Length: 134
Image (cartoon, rainbow, N blue to C red; front, side, top):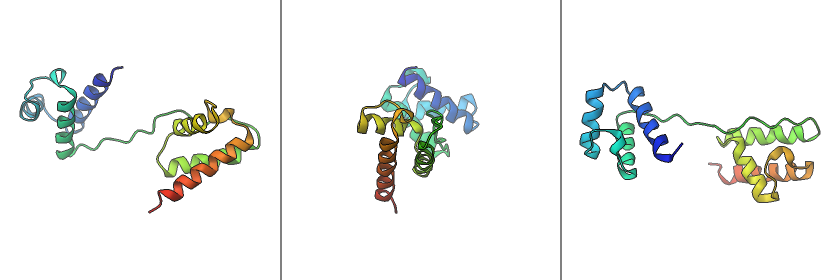
């Protein structure tokens, strides 16, 4: 799915969440972006429309999409439990930990790390959590 189609989907989600009727929606598009249909929007106009929706009360729901928790059966489980807790506190998906594993160890997925690497990944997330404490 292209980025524009994703953005258009978000616009229609915002319209539905705000319970806007079609006339109000089209009037808002004309007022904010000078278009009659969302298909006519360019990327800058999409940003303006989304800002207007947020001003009107639309609250985008945070998606924590990614993948499921890795399934392992050895000593790494305690490290993975801590990693899961750190990710949840930071509101990050498992794919974030995967990208850290790839960056740190050149390994695509967390469950493919050995025990030592898993421990070091956990420690990196602890350092990151301390860095972002308030």
